[in-house]
Image (cartoon, rainbow, N blue to C red; front, side, top):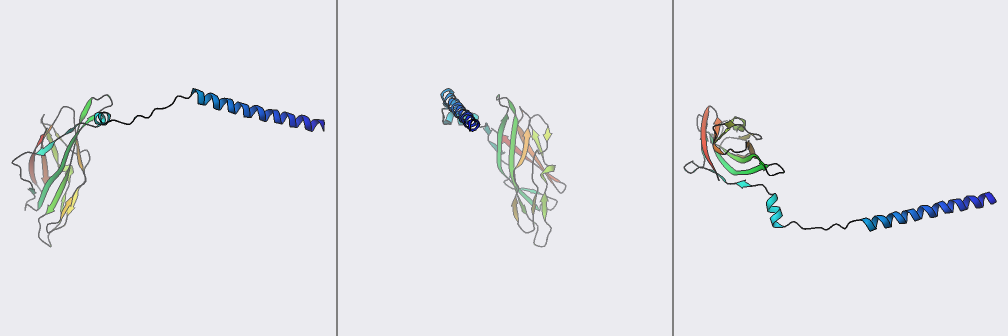
Length: 183
């Protein structure tokens, strides 16, 4: 009987000590915790974190649609030209990302062949005379008789300090150079 009373007393003492330690730790933790202040982002902060963008246009005098192919069967439009500055966390420019989409119209008559444009053959000419290839692109295919399709974004990454001056398009042993302006 004495042994069971001693065991119960010890267990009760251990439980009381553990419960007191938990309360002390909770109190200590809540007393030393620093309140966190939530500050909404202002338009100035949001504007500073957005990348710098440039206006890119096809140069005046360039036709809206570009015809390629030996029989002028591929009609292309350059859409959604965009350029944004790429920079590191310190704000140093790493270059410019130029993106665009192509709209392809197949001018072959019904029963004619499909037209497939592969932008991997295109080259972007820079103001320093260098010609670069795409960093990312998607091909586009159009069936005969005025079928129109549009690519996903095609992307060039320009080195820092350069600007695009022309986009050279190639298809079926034909080439067209489209002059570009960036402001």
